[in-house]
Length: 259
Image 1 (cartoon, rainbow, N blue to C red):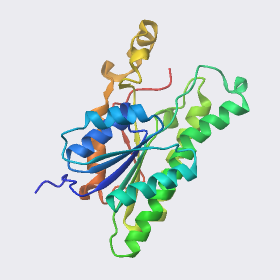
Image 2: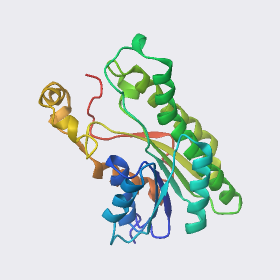
Image 3: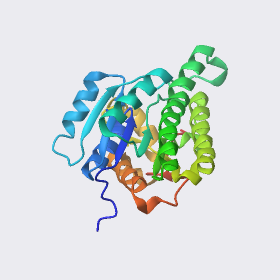
Image 4: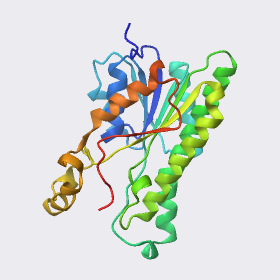
């Protein structure tokens, strides 16, 4: 028996139409998991779904603004109407540092935008998923997986992107708290911390010779992570094999985000 066979399971992936989120979606669908991708861009959603044609899991896409609770609740209702259940929620939406300006140079608007996109997005998606999962557990079906994509910046800090590091550290704290609160319902909470990832979203960065020359020597073994690495962790976390992993962080690649 393949313990990673996710046939019949259903996972929501926010921001799953590119980069890490797409790698997670593809890995889950490849193991028979039905996937609902929630993203703001309908064209990217369509392209993501097309890239998974032929995989064993069914793929659905929803236009959703994860910073808006009404939009998230509508997407959750539509997903439940289609699949009948949600077993996992992978909160991957967010934004990066937005430039190398210092803390004292940042504006209130910049802080609120980063806070909303990074932290509110996880909060709203997790809240909607956890409500459904706990209701199902009370009806005799205890299974749920909450997984946030955080950042090594939340551990190591980051140079001149303090707002970004603060929001990611808050996500890690939320995961730890949820791991305690939801364990009695059979719901686990974990965080995945990426290093530098090769994807369409980082192609421009990787093309910057000066950036690569400065950053590459600071990454162990000069290695960049692959989106598929996160897919493998996602499959594991959705399986019964991970039943006792909760409030853990999985560090992939070990690359530094402070430079």
